[in-house]
Image (tube, rainbow, N blue to C red):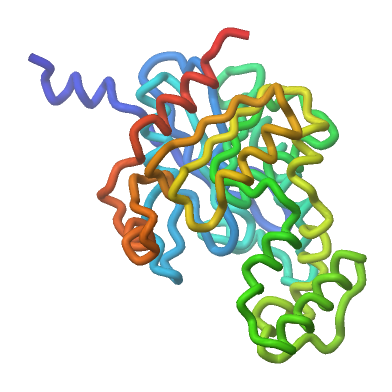
Length: 307
């Protein structure tokens, strides 16, 4: 029978890690399996104030998706660094003023974390696992090629430019607000700021965030996937109420070499959930629920597949 001491020796080891950056360091958690890691990955968080564990307490999101993913990968011998992106959590001091933030900063950080993860784990390269908006960060990070990135795992990521997704989300607005919102998006997509966005949409289009939106709207995930010649796994839940299976299929269509995994009954935070909206969202708030069957196994198998 395994003693408690022996079990503790076999458990993954969690270590705080720091990455040099301006104006302040970035922070994350390295989780290493017992023994030599077979591979290492960097887990890139989604949009907003999402922390390294996959939680946004301000919005009641406590799914702990990234912590659970890291723990599951460690069981397969895969080490990982999950990060607080700049401006969030322990990396809050590294966040620039909102008007100075650009999407490229997240991509630059992802490349730097891949180099750090490879060095920490003693591997030649690291995988980038991007969840939600983090999937676009991963794609943008390899736009110029990077020999420290082994490949990409894109989980619950959009397959269309952000403008298309935003227009879909704003489709229920009453007129003339909907038309005005579309006009603002059109200007931002053209690279032009808008001095007087509708007051009703100030939270989305406030002037200080517009430079960031311009840098984000310019990116087409399908086009970026088509240009990348490394291995890609696209993972998508069929009951995701934020991103649809069609998005995953768009990435697959753009890059036929990509592997596509569609998990039935799995939502945006990669847990088992029904299609009913209220019940689906309730899953976001329960860290005790495990990741859905297949998510970790499929991800680990793709990372460890001989190439």
